[in-house]
Length: 419
Image 1: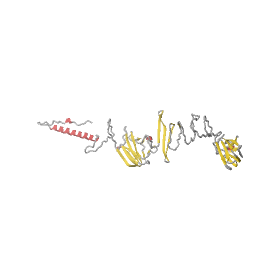
Image 2 (image 1 turned 120 degrees about the vertical axis):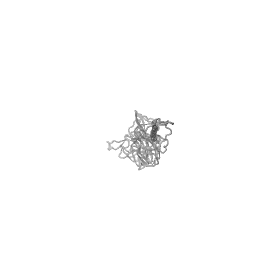
Image 3 (image 1 turned 180 degrees about the vertical axis):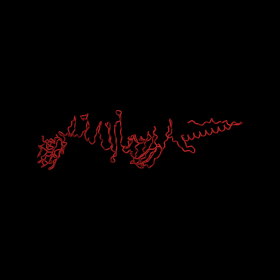
Image 4 (image 1 turned 30 degrees about the vertical axis):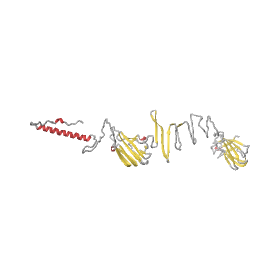
């Protein structure tokens, strides 16, 4: 601003001493002096109303409100922002006013909701931000935001989109930034306090770029199920180590690639290697059960192998008591019936498999170590035995094969004597 005071229109040499001076000169000097005082008054008043001050003027009110006007190209040092405490026992609905402070704090005394934000204008190309510090003494408390908070919210730990509410993992102090470029019509929400290596809220999505698009590579969730931490990892492909720290199972619907697959309690389900028709090196395989047709390449076995659909090489040795029953195992191919004395009067043997579970083509051989005067040889359930012995001694023994078809014998299985 250029001052309008004109000190040149005041004649400082008038009146001239020692001579008669016109009164008009006095009037001109008085008039010009008065006019300059009025100009000075107006300019000083204008400065008092608009200037930025370090301290209040005498008999004045301190006010450095810039009213949204532009300050260009400043250099700041030691800048501080005003802190405003919303309350030490906040609950229910509250209003956050930008004019009260750029850093606002509150301590929850229950679940709270921000009903609205005030004085974030104007909207003409201005960026405004506020930091909100929330002290949470109880993890049961929540904080709900209005619908104007709509940008970046899906990346906020503990955020629930359906009710616009943040839940907290536990007691603590959480800091958020809210900023707007449209005067408070919409807000961007940023989490400033949570450790980026610890994800609160139990949901983490890791993306990668494929053909210019972000694709979910790994989705990890964790939840509290009856006081037990349960975690899930979902991915298109797993390459590397997957470790379960608890006693729960690891499930994968995609591919698992590993140098070694170790199952301490066995593999329950189907193990498929589509690109390797022959399983050749798996360490020690102590038990292999095949319930349907199987195409197996090189298989070296030390000990017994149970192969449904053919001979079974496991051996069962049973002491037969007079009047007792011997149940033949489903995973053996040879049974030795040994009466406890040289001759017993009666005994029953029951062929392998509960009803409907013996495999077609399954073969079992039966030998007798002593004499049984009356022998009952039965199938399980509705299964029957063809060519069963009515008596037995050391000179006897036989081989039976199992077959079951829904169109034959009313669907009942039959053990046929073949030797």
